[in-house]
Length: 205
Length: 403
Image 1: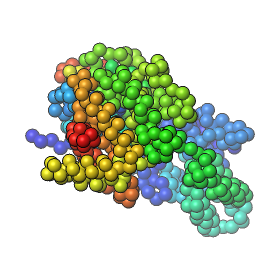
Image 2: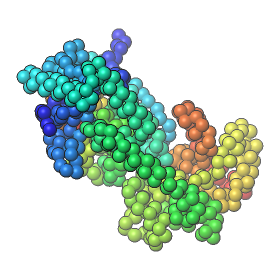
Image 3: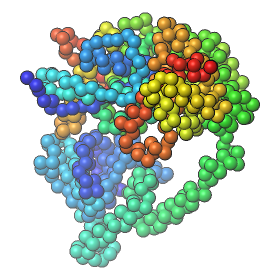
Image 4: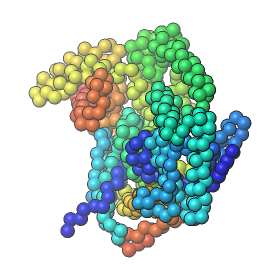
């Protein structure tokens, strides 16, 4: 039975070149992975519907190019984005260092309203950036933090589901439920999927 | 004189006649004789001599305003609605019913007193107060139209006290500022007089080569040599980004003509070098393949007949100004060597083409500027050509550039 979504959220993936933005989308939307991807050029988007106990939600997931030449392009797409997934590569310290400049880019063009999620990709590989380092940056930037692997699929659906949940909760907050009932800063929210409970840290709400 | 202060939830409902999306904020709210001020927290509300009203985030003029319980405006309980003469409508809310009642009475009393004050000053009857309010609103709107840019600043500093003398004073300041800004010399005149110089980055290719007495900019040679020395086998060379702040540092040093040794540990990360090279190419006022050649290369690239395609592309490369041709050949030669190691660095011809297509050739700017909104689809089309052209130049390198 085809279900119509209650709400469509616009989510955009950004981050340095070669951190795995397109791969993360490929994993989430088609559950596949290809080792040899070309750099992304233009901007494309995918739709994915998530069914939860609360209802049906669609995500409009935008993929952007990470090459410096296109630094200015994603800005146009930040507008009206509900959520931003900012990726870095746990095998590449530079990509984490550049997170700050991405954050200021996002703040400049999307305003302070977008929910930002910081994702460390490629945890299947030999890492050079620790979980703590990524987490510290996420706390500073007031972003939700999670480590994923587009190759093995670890935490990928959880990341998208968590973002959806946060967006939904926030929107309900906007609809008149006093903000004080939202998840307080730094508390852990639970996302259940595949009969498994993942716990992760919410630094922002 | 503070009538009342405390924490409240509030949101805009209507602004300048337009309905706003609700955005409930909990802020420190202060009620003054004529104004309601909103602060991020209590600290911001500390009043000092230099900032007589602290640092409010926003404010609202109460003169002529109406306040009452808001019903059906929000699903929250204990909500007040405040409407001002300027078409602004706010909702105020507090969990505690007695607190919100106190606020309601305080605001009502303040508004009433503000009305009495105006009447006593103007010795006019109630009917003309409305008129007077409307006049003051008109005046405010005019102000805003004139000085939209300074609107935010003005709101913060001036909104609390709108008196005639103040307005005159700030008009003076405004005209002074405007004169000052208009008197500033333009970028072009500064460049002409040599005050601002584009030394390396952002300097036209031709000028740079003339200055350096070469056909290929020294900086390109420097970067290429370094990449060939230690970067050819690095995974994703040219695709992976370098740390932006370090790339900027390298750029700054090059622009200041400071001696740079890329083999120093500071530049250990090879992606800094590639990042700086990409930045250099990007910052050229006109790309290595000049704007005038863009459409010609596209036409040549679209040809189906292979010998014809080769012939046209080759002729176009030959027609490039000497500096551009030699720089392009030099870069292509280098990219060939990168591609030869694609089993190690995973940079096949297509990948190099995607990274450098939009860097080496660009559609002339006037086209994209005249239709800024149509960027989406037409951009995708010419982007595909940018890559195809570089792809073709790389795969047919020997026959296009060498024979």
